[in-house]
Image 1 (cartoon, rainbow, N blue to C red):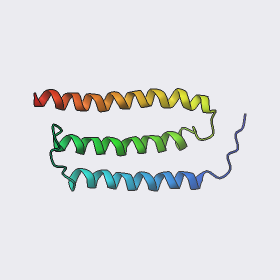
Image 2 (image 1 turned 90 degrees about the vertical axis):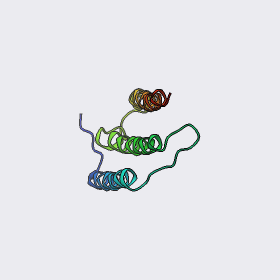
Image 3 (image 1 turned 90 degrees about the horizontal axis):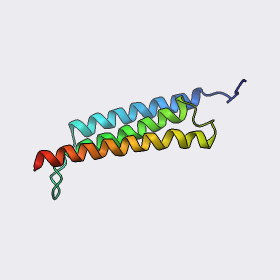
Image 4 (image 1 turned 120 degrees about the horizontal axis):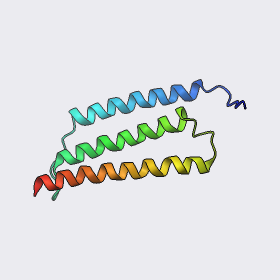
Length: 104
């Protein structure tokens, strides 16, 4: 079974440059931006959340192009994206839970 998706090099290059830009944004967010404490949330938790959000975008780009989910059946995408989404929710929840228990 041969799948001809045409020339995929432009897609790979778009993802590459997107990943490079988001990596620079992650480094800038970690080194340059320091959020103030808001209500009961310390500023460093917001820094971690921004870093995780950028990582989510990077993971989605890699999954969509390099795992060829762009060309697969939408039902297969459902079975890939739902566990990844649940994993990310768990990651964010544990991040806040750990910081919350540290504060109290």
